Length: 412
Image (tube, rainbow, N blue to C red; front, top):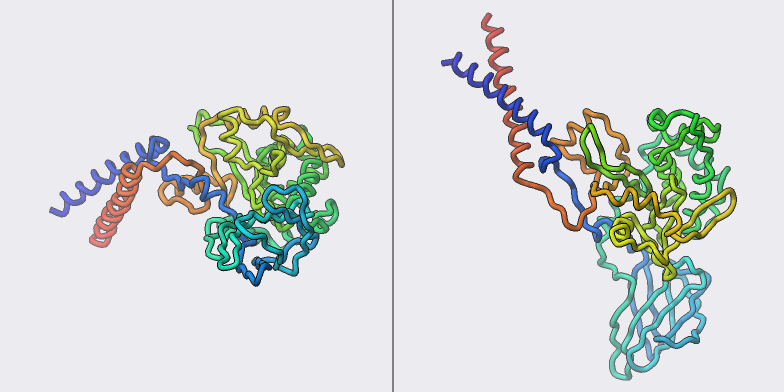
């Protein structure tokens, strides 16, 4: 009876090994788990500036916000009237006179980098009704945004100190007043890094820490590719106090792959928008004349409809900041975004190039350090359940075989 059990477990072990080997071979055919996220999940704003309170006394309204407002003051426009009044904030409060009836009050900051504030109020002698504000209220959820919190703990103290030192020596970033100015200053430095095709090869360079990659580049001894630039940009950006993240593409088999590219996104706090930064192509912060900045998912959609016209990008040459038509530099982005590979957003602290063992473990125990963009795709939960059951049964069966082996040796 015991012999029959042994034979049964050994045969089952072999079968389960074959089944799991087949599942790994077919891993891209529905067996992988992808943490798909929608556009609204990936691009939620941080809501650090929100409406806390609205007070109306007689015909004077005071709106209170969660953060101090722009010291430069605001130009108040009522509805579409061309002339506006100058309104100076007091810390985080704005006070202004109300007009009778329903009106839209727009506060445009003299500091153009800050976010305009729009509020609609119905004012009468008997009742005052708040209708709309373009900034959120105090109950807004920010948990998704907090996924991308600045995390310097993955770097050593020496690396953290060196990043600050490099930024102070080579840039004027800590004297800038807002995130867009800081991001432009950082981009100017990264764009100017020496790139020597005869230097340390891109693959070998990727094994170095970002700080060492910077040092090798400054010595004109680095052949920088997109992954190198992205790692450097991320490393310096978070030490400059800029919330940033790395985006790449995933898909393909060992003998072929989708077009793979790395770049960054930077969150511009004043605009409450994520903006694309691509150091390899010297393309930064695509935008249009309305002040809208474009992110990686926007770029994917723009490629599908050839929607690059009337949009501009920043580029950097020596000490000059250029604003170029997106159409004139779009080719690299069209190339990569024409692929149907998955867009992958790396969470803070995750490695850009995981080991083969890490990749295998991730197949069975998915890491929480990735998010994949899709408004349409979903996981094949039946195949994922089959994969998990096959691995659990393999572990149980292997344990039973090991038990019999140990028991037999003790019997000897």
